[in-house]
Image (tube, rainbow, N blue to C red):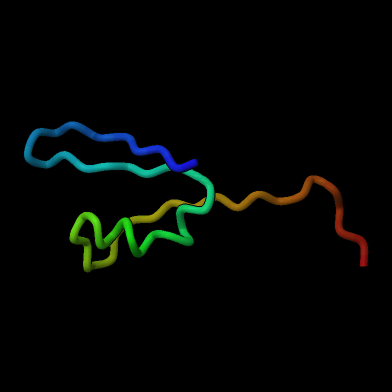
Length: 54
């Protein structure tokens, strides 16, 4: 599920999208808002708490 939060700054307002799988669809969100330049994207990886044994 992807959630949209709006930062309300009048004519400088912008959306923030949060959710799993968003990076897979980021191009469509950029297109939706007319973004063609590099924009900040925050991403957090989840790592297993179990040690990896090879």
